[in-house]
Image (cartoon, rainbow, N blue to C red; front, side, top):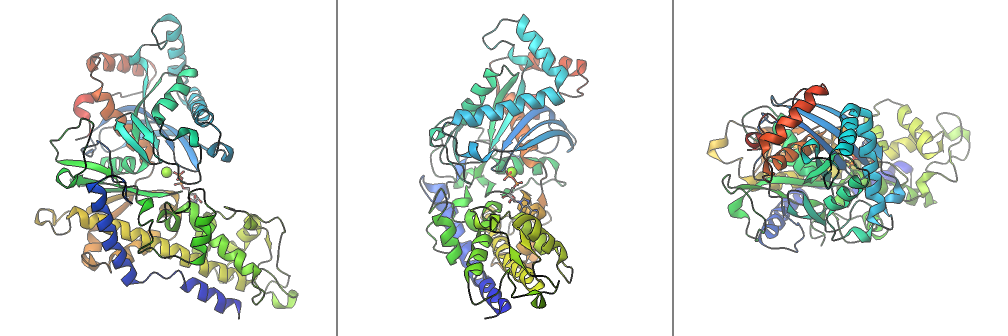
Length: 531
Ligand code: ADP
Ligand code: MG
């Protein structure tokens, strides 16, 4: 069999037909509803106790950290109250060994250290002042509460939220595995390590990245309607949306504001259809799952998100390299190579190692429109140690990678469509002139060429949406969504701190900010709280 024929037949195994898409949307709607009725279902449908989305008028200076899956980001955010913000951030890759550390303490100590470095680098004056104050004021924490930065903690793993800054870890995903942390309050774990370093920081809010994305998009998006869905397509995938309280049948323990009649629900859709009743499954999907840290779970995520697409492709490629009937990444001699060299692959290529192929190279493949695919061939050499890949090799790589990426985009459309249908906004007569706004974040949706176009293409063939409906759905990147969103929720939390006079704490914070040349601080945190 020629390489071309073989790669075509492999790519075809990743086809996900219009019929399949429609079937999956129906099942998604069923599982969404099931999760609203009771606990322990496929989609966890976690109530967030966030009962409204912002409108762009919120103000203040907050800190936010984001433990995503690949990176840890620390930022400070000035919300200007006019839909704009100023953001300062730093980012570090999470060391692989910490993802599987023996104790949670090791990971959280690393996170606290990054917060310290950030404060020293970007808010040095503020930081020094706090250290001085600590030495002069005696209080249990070393400094008075009002001098403390409120921090929104974006923690993008499934947690059972039991308060605005309290939540216990349900399970790890995305390759993390620190059993010691399961069942513990992740805010307390972080606060403990922050306190060990004597930092003037209070973990004020626990935020899922999807909720942060929803809030951030709603703060910054134009128009009068709020955003209905925040979705992540990064290392993992998940979504949070605005649900009617009347549809939420399972019991809610915490206190919350019932006046809006709505609550943001974190779907944890990475676990959609773990039972594989509608999800597609190739031999490579099966192999990936078997070798993962969590077999049988996050089955939707394993077909959609950045952590896994590269690994699916890697498994396909390793099989192709083993196949004696096709010449892939190898030549008899230089005559069969269009660059008149001989292709070979280094023995210690990362292609032979689990997670050795970064999904980013699939974006390079999809973006390379040159006749010789020279950019892709360069990357194959740099990243995977493939010397002088032939044009036919690069074409095979590209077509298989594209099939995997396209299937992921069509699967993404399934979740988006189901939630749009669930909100009823397409048919609501009161909502006919407004777009249905969706915020997305994550490297995959941001950088994979045509990912959103492929989502739209699939939305247009879905029953109940169609081409007209698809046009009304506005999917926008909420860049830095998790940081801004976490700041917005920290703002809500600050407004809820009833134990002290808000006026007092704001007064102090304001005069501090003036001294430090930090322009605005919450003018009116109580009224500015998301509504
Ligand atoms: P996090 O999930 O930690 O918030 P990101 O949103 O940046 O981080 O997502 C990181 C994931 O995106 C990784 O799995 C990585 O392989 C993938 N990725 C990074 N760059 C690209 C790219 N250019 N195209 C496609 N996927 C990418
Ligand atoms: Mg992220």
